[in-house]
Length: 380
Image (cartoon, rainbow, N blue to C red; front, top):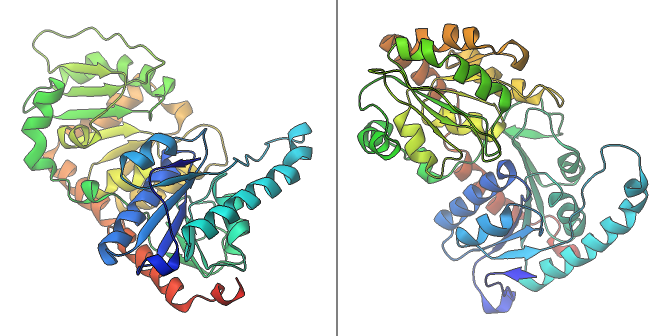
């Protein structure tokens, strides 16, 4: 299945065709699309085609951003030995066959993978046929990127020591809309949009698109103390959760919403944030200079805490383990930041300075260089 126009016969076009594989979650899709935008800035004659699956968020996000999407079979890796693990070789072979057909049809000149179950078949289909570039946003590289990096022309990472060979640290590609965001210029509009106090120090709270119950409980439990300190709150609690907070008369509003459709305005409205620390979240929050209290997911391999480490070390954020996040800890962490403008400004500058704002353009240049050198192109 194809979503959007493709068509990539080399004889019929002048510019290169870049195939991006970053489906599944926003953490894979957004860096891929930021790269796509950067490629088009550097080479307006280029074509960018995305690979995706029916089950991923890319099905809606990619076409909405104006790029064609080619569907391939998903190859999810079972977490435990089971019957699905026995079926994996057949699924991989089927996905590789379909992906090779796509690469040939669109006239791919390079495949750029960002990890996840879309990238693995893309790497295996491209091997020996077109050059491969790998980007990993996380502090610990995933399985797909470990495979792809073995035969990639270039390997880019967000932070050092990911476990990938020949890694080049460039940061995470970000959307221009985030990089250009002028929080101060948008603040008045943003606060009107959400119904926030126009001048009070304001805290943004989010646990991601699904919300985070531990964050919801801890911050809402500190509502009275935040109100007494004159702090307003914009709290995205997740579509599957509910949140009821009693407003304090005369205090700045505590505004709760299921989901933030306008994240740009949410970032502009806030003076600090309490949130998870996925790689993409850390990169975007740091890029706009928002002081943060990061609360890593309490499960997994600990990579979320590692994602936040550089910003914490630079002084742009605090790190609070999920198990220690109580209403009292929220108040003790947030109120001193938001009541001290000097500290807020210092943390903002430190957060902004810890990132790699040029990552998208750097990665685009690496991709175009791989096409130019084309170490695998002659074997097709």
